[in-house]
Image (cartoon, rainbow, N blue to C red; front, side, top):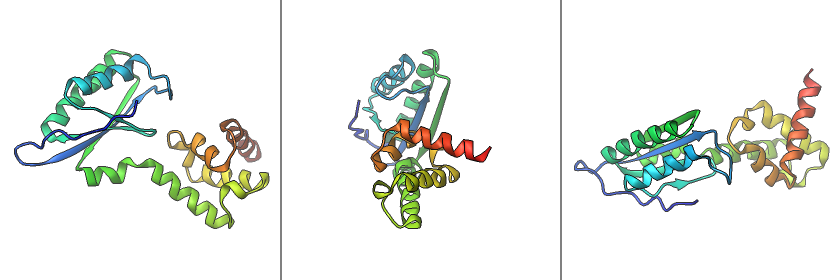
Length: 172
């Protein structure tokens, strides 16, 4: 469901803004009717939403984006959403808050520097230590972080969950 996110023409003042939104609950590969309805509301407003791993974005004039956001929030809730998070800003500013993957990449990079090796090259004990450190730093609060870290380490998400469970048991 990857969109092109072509911005609509700017408003009279020339301002382009980006709206980033997250609709819950969200299940990768199986968006519920609340997510589908929100995406359709964006399309009905003239946008092709860019559906990413961490958020969906639309770019356009301030007035058009705000109108689309109103419609997508209403459509999401009318179709069963439990939460909708929205951020609106100029595309450059929005890029600073929208790229959560960069935040995770920075955390992983810091742990790799700390441990002296890429996560994929670590043995089981090193990977468990990396998961503990990432957990302490809040990495797994980011959406899809378990899957992303598993991919980086070359292990399954189940293995990451097992490492997290081991961290929790050790803390007790």
